[in-house]
Length: 554
Image: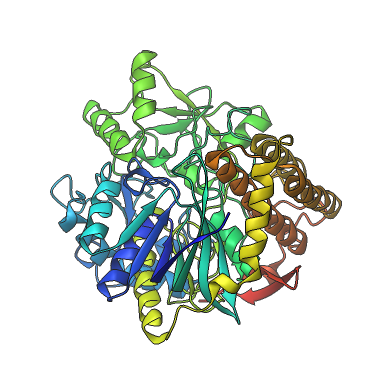
């Protein structure tokens, strides 16, 4: 596999929301930009088919005191792992990005005004802008093309190349044809925007690995690449768990206009008794493990109850589901004759995954490695989903281009020993006549993660045993994985990335000797107040993993 070579100023890894926004701003700064996308940028990533909520601060709606909204963000379902300065910078620019999207053709005011709907406490500011995002990826792809961005679809990036502490390029595999083509990209700056990490734990319906609430092709590539390159990851010990219809894993619970109730029809939370589109029911945001806890206690199941939702609100909800991208769910309910005026829908807590856990960035969007930036879901010290990807993608792309102007040449990425190592590994996987498939390795990983680093219980003995098995799995995978075409090689690489993400989870879970949030240690069943404002980072150095504690930035 002799690699083909491409040069650019800024390489953007991933053509999702963060990647396209980064590419556009980098191009506006005069950089030669390449977007390397695993699938096709028009419909890729967790925002592929739409979204309908955009975290945003608009002074004319919220007032001039932004500190009120900062507090609302930090108290929300996504604010627990933020460095506050990143939150402030995000909010300062969020309205500009919303106006950009509206101008480009993504309808951010479908009701004619800036309307904030759902994910809300009664009597508190509402911070989720309701918009119509079903065509957002197509619009952003066209905007990137207008700015001269070169998008190479079907090119998953496998590694970033670092030389003397600075990024100099990346390695990819072009998978459009049956025979994969190794690709070496020399770049002055690299922006990682590969989305969430799914398929780490068993899916909502075990055996159906791709039944995930987020894009099943988002497999922690940014976290894994950054980790192997020596960049700091942060908050990896806290995988996130979403919720939605049982066994039909679809995100968008805030789009549902109903009340979460127990089997007797009584509201589970204290916030609302009757459904309204303005508030929704924020109970499941506040009590993240609600659906699992109700089931385990025997008091469940818990249901999304829309039976008292006004007819106009139901119509609004179904429109929102379409914009969210939940067309499969709508079609299924129609085919199965499920009438939400009569039928409650049982909800469940979905499998753990990584979103807002990963690469540590600074106020420029830069990681601890010079020239390596990250934005969107793989960032570990900030999360705001679609809006976060839009805003921090824009910030990271602009700063990546500014840095690229200062770098004289693209470096000598082709001389990196990593190129030869990956060439050998991929060639061996492709040449094996017998061996394990990527599915076998991925299922083994999910079993190890569930049994030894699950969200119900962790302990030193369990975590150490699981880490040992995980490392055994990596060695066996490298020795026995086989692939017969470009597609299955890509899946094998995804699985290896997930194993690296799993290692980072095990190591940080071992170091955090307390119980906090979804991280439950049976041998340390209390929350240590001395760690309440601490973040834990992990990075690779000389083949080993180093953990460090730091203060959460306020």
